Length: 459
Ligand SMILES: Nc1nc2c(ncn2[C@@H]2O[C@H](COP(=O)(O)OP(=O)(O)OP(=O)(O)O)[C@@H](O)[C@H]2O)c(=O)[nH]1
Ligand SMILES: [Mg+2]
Image (cartoon, rainbow, N blue to C red; front, side, top):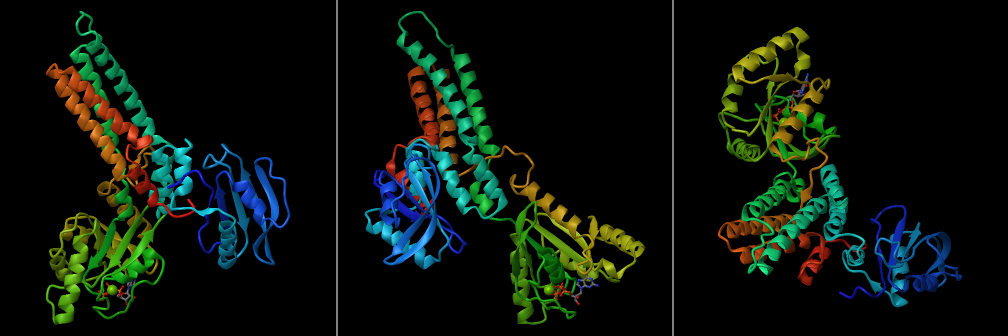
């Protein structure tokens, strides 16, 4: 891709009240002048108003933001035309600009230029994409940490320490004929082991981006009529699942995105579990329910608080083996507080686990249930809900580079122990290369293209 010409793209999301047309490159100012209905002096960074011709005889008002090189996102001269116009007019404006000699920007090309002009390191450039693509708060938080350079802070420090160690080993090699030792093997291996531990800590303490994208799932299980669908609707805050006083109302597995201020997961409802399937429909519904419950991180198991006989519930509990089970005594509003307390104690004894009284009708216990779900997800599910602010999300590329550096350092330690300092120096060089690939120009241009091709146009 040519990164020296002038490009244009719509950089705002579709459907908003305002559209942003972004232009960057050496011809950006001249291109603006070509679509302004009257010439305007463009001399300094700032904001001005202009009338922009989008088609012959059609002009719209635009707010123009000017950023002169190098004080812009891309490092080049950049202009943004903000217009309150529908998609057809915005497309016409871009057409006009293309007709005056600009090129339509490729995916991620603005950010690629920012990277090439030293405005962002590669990890930060990738973070821009993760922020744009991020669909939940954890993805955004993690991407923001990546953008703030948290990953490169650690890798840069490790890189420097490696270079330091390498220079001492190489000095020893240069003066190997003379009796001067710059660094002893014990000191060198100790230093290398410390750097390796730092990097390993980065790997173990980080979240995989992929895990943030694959949201955890939580299922609601229990006997027919236990109040599962009502609970799902109450937690989601809308009527996702049909509710009726008849048993076996729910047949399919239904899911909804459960977003709270502290976590996000897929919550699903399914058919009530049965010990005996009466017909083919029962059997199919059971299979679907058991299959869905098998794959979720936590199951909320509902038993009606006021149910006189819980034999059926105990039997169906044995049908599933969830990773985490959270017991809910449903429809607790049907009992007095004292009776509800007694029921919860009896259930806790029978199921050998604590029960939380809940009511989909009154909202009783729903907040506590949310807290329990959050705790079970954060225990089993990485660190997405952990308070620690310093968790970095590593993309597969970062993970690979850090792992490669760790492997090379391990090899270098072995070589030093065997007295093969020259090979050790080569291994340390390879580790340095792996780390510098995280923030600097990767050796292979294809890698760069691959990274930016995942972006959307306009970013
Ligand atoms: N009083 C009271 N009634 C409830 C509550 N939750 C559910 N119900 C009633 O219990 C009945 C069954 O509710 P559902 O939510 O359909 O139960 P379910 O477990 O999904 O039932 P199936 O889909 O048939 O397995 C309905 O008549 C609901 O109105 C509650 O918290 N309090
Ligand atoms: Mg139901």
